[in-house]
Length: 402
Ligand code: EZ4
Ligand code: CO
Image 1 (tube, rainbow, N blue to C red):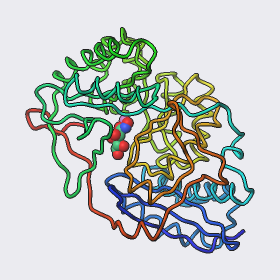
Image 2: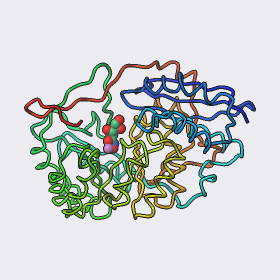
Image 3: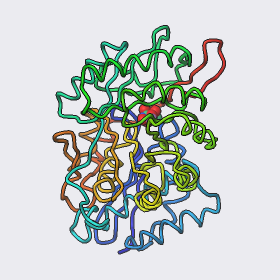
Image 4: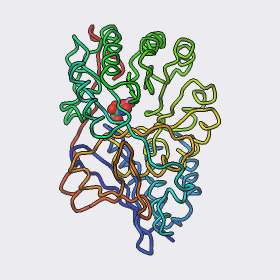
């Protein structure tokens, strides 16, 4: 079953997406997400200039062999651009494998291990009152889990706070906007938000929060302790994770569960955090961590150490990634939760998909393959637009992690 065509499709139905579409000699197609927010064209070039010539003529059935040939064959290993490109090929091959056998991909991964995929939505507001109202709207929509972010008094813009209360899209057209940051103001405001949320929503709704890599370990420890009375499902990205020793310090101080990994691209980025049980949830996802093949390897390692999965699922991960994530989520034993930010109506039209939301859960459906496609004619109506994530400075002008 030879691959005869490989196309890289870049489109912007509200935000930029890069999609790889493979076609086999018998006319089957498979899709893979290759979107790396703010650096999209680097992956498009990696695929077009260096990977497409290697996959034309390969046997589409050899998923594992193709993964290792692209990983080991590049000599230069890991990194988000390489691993996103490999993920796109891997995801498209799983899609083709399912279609060739007439089964959904989750059947090939061991079948359904649960009834549905628990997801969390993003509630945000300019202040605590608005954020609480947004969280209540999610509960009314049927969500059992809600991530909450509120504007920090004294700061003009805050990570995670969108224009409406049900959506948040950080990438801006043109050059990167600059925001200001104060750890002191942030640490004072977050516990107040969660005190109000527990009061409003009661004990059963899962509450999550993303610190977005902005704290030092001792600051994160203070936040984790302050949030203990509100029993969060997780505190995400408390510190930048390049220095993983930082997590040991946080762990010594707080029982608030920790989640990390949306910027990781390989099992080697997670190994210490998992094997030393320094985290509770690993957030690597299909598109940025080498595809379904590599994500399963990470999950299986994590399973041995009581670490569960909690894949990244913001709007910059296309519906192709979301579909692949759901086949993974429903089949892997140590699944925890899946992030779910609803895509725009234009994005949903460009990427028709079988997955459906009901009662706080997503379901990948039973369509053969991944159950997702790209409408290329429609995608062509939304050409690429330059966009960047914001840059953050402290109040005195020093660059800080965004
Ligand atoms: O900032 O996906 O948990 N979700 C997040 C996201 C990320 C964006 C970066 O492209 O942290 O909002
Ligand atoms: Co995050």
